[in-house]
Length: 103
Image 1 (cartoon, one colour):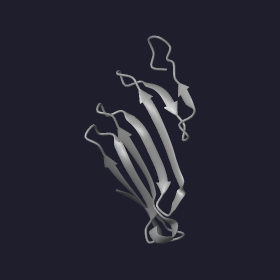
Image 2: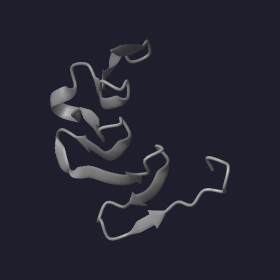
Image 3: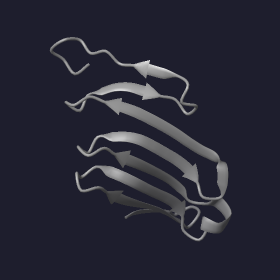
């Protein structure tokens, strides 16, 4: 957990982190202490495949279901990102790497 205090407004900003068995960040919660019921909590959740590669990501506010954003990725056996799929699932962007590089 990480906390930051704003001296001008006397607010405490809180961020909590959770990691999977592969050491990847899989959940982040951030909020202003005491304002969770009025401003909500921003949550980002990530889903890993069996090798620890992030393949899906969801970001939302606990008080507003319309703010839910979704991102999906496809990953090759070597861990390289090969495609990104948008929120609708209709648009797929393939990534092609220059031979001998990871870009």
